[in-house]
Image (tube, rainbow, N blue to C red; front, side, top):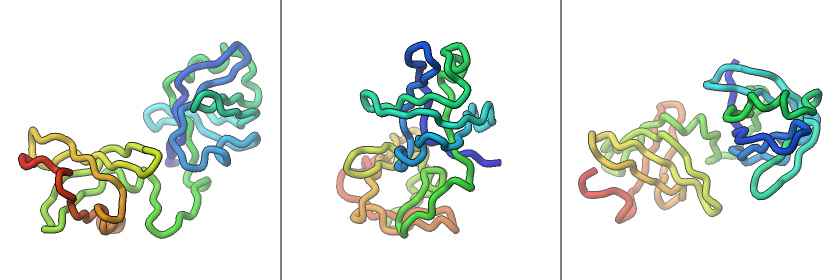
Length: 175
């Protein structure tokens, strides 16, 4: 089965089995609702399946407790692991909306059809996401592409390509 990360367990909280989770999903309120089934994964391998018992936002993170895990000793080992959903729990997205796992790994081409590199990460900012592109040329810096309509012109999931129009200053002359 394929799992998709929605948050990282960064620490425990208190002694009653709560974990502190840094969110990596646009659907946090729904994903962390009591009764939701989540998967704890490490390096894309299933470690455990849990059900959310309680959830609350605390200082920019979520504090979660799981059904049957009401002691710090039961959740301590999960620090550093990821909470995930499976493919059956994904939403249908609108046109021009994508899951991160669909974008990471795509090849990026400029307006002259020149390969710029491959998307290796996505930084989520308040106003828009920024796609981190590992430059195709050796020894070149990563390229940071804002996911805005002025830059990203086409996302072709079927062919694994993104076509962009570079704004001045986005790419060093060495790239």
